[in-house]
Image (tube, rainbow, N blue to C red; front, side, top):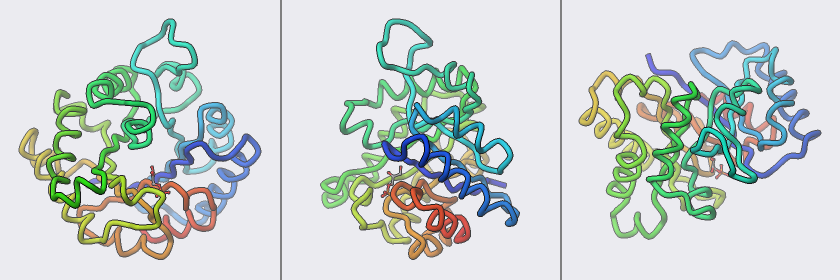
Length: 252
Ligand code: 13P
């Protein structure tokens, strides 16, 4: 049975104190509430990762990184390697976020390399993709999503897919307050599952968790999560409030 996941991407927010306090609050809030087949993940910025890992140790929260470099090590000033993440107890990394693609020029080809390095180091990957507004307006959104998934992931062997989580994040819905409708999310998630089934197998397609991201809030989470192919969310803004994040976890 595929797993449900609520993941908070804190992006470039929260200093050390705020990060520790937020993870503590979220940990407390889910403590007395058994997480029925649901994983809760938060992704702080690099400098706060190790402390947040420690703070979250006794809770059910897992910690992810927001990015990593594709090389194992070397002269890459300012970069962070997969092994560095593993060495502080991080087991999951977000790759391909639209902000990385847009502001840092990350291409499908570069992301494919990052995915390989992450998997080679036994990291799990939350792989993000999604169309911009112009693609949706011109009815090109399925093609865009298919090519991002194909170029970033379809070179993988079938057995790698146990360590892949997909996150559909339409760029026009990120941080805008505008969400995809539950029907739009379902339609895309169903499409994604079909292309994974075609490339690999129905079994792999049925097992992979597909998260929706883009202005998920307590007020809309339940409706989005109620769709059969939406297995949870990748949450930005609302993950910065322990109360809102908890409400979204409850919605699942
Ligand atoms: P918002 O929830 O702020 O729209 O951000 C979504 C996102 O980008 C998560 O990775």
